[in-house]
Length: 241
Length: 184
Figure (cartoon, rainbow over the protein chains, first blue to last red):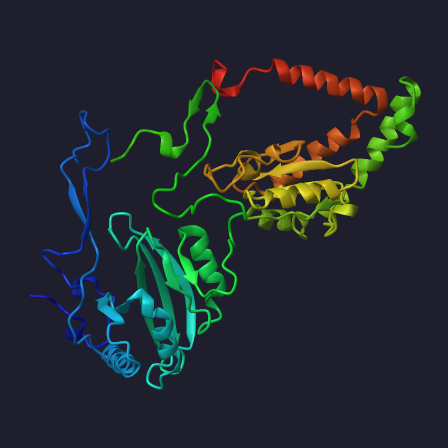
């Protein structure tokens, strides 16, 4: 039987309350072994390890506490705004709630979240990027952390875009603080935020090729010379998987 | 620089060298170039406990035009490198560079695409100071060793001969990876 946060009315960080699933549809990768050279004798004893990399599945309501209020208010607001398909799924994990939003609706949903009386998420404290190379068709995720100072609530939004078409609408019109965060996410992950006033690199030099925080971006580095020996840079040493 | 560079080698030149070296080392103003955690140790060095004022160096100049020494304190990112070079170019001669900490000296723990692997790729370095970060005592030690270099800086024809000798030695030096023997 699944344990849910409603067993504990105050949303808890207790890991024993995590929703545990035997299987998930959303396995994005399968990792084998731990350390050692592939194909040759592995003496570490960890060669038989198999680990599934899976995305969290949707959590079934009720979520407990204020999370149900927020979900109800958001659902009602999106229905009234004609955005029925906006919410893809809701995940509650370790007492934190994440709304997965379909990318074409994120700008409208952000406006609702800020302006609706029952939501009032006035502050967007950051836009982050995540790269899941194994999550085919939804490789790039943008994650928004919102705070409602009126109600003292924090939620998270997540939007996915395919690597082949890395476009996500910008929320700068609603949350001006997201301006530099979206530039940073563009700089490091190559997500193009449509409607951003000036989407240019912010951390790396302007002429930098590539987006360094993607999983397939090489770490770089130079061989280090010691007396009597040379050590290659980290990603050119022997492989650990 | 001036007329002292035109003097013929001999007693006159060495005397002028000694005087000029003493003046330069006794009035040695650093530029602020704190880039990371080493800057905290650098600021502490200028504070009352370690008291860089003992050596007439407590005034960290915010303007490179008034500075003689650039203490590169911290890792230099690829984006900061042109800025660092511009600050260096804006300093009037004679000028010295002290690479403070392993990151400024060699890239340190950041052996990756984002960090310049040693500030000597961008500017000539006169003194390398290891440590992560080095203690204020180590920075003062490095500065005093640099004072010694400044005191004995040669001028004019002597300087040209010294540069040539350094160049020859550097060309003959064995790369670190090919050195043999004990690790020291």
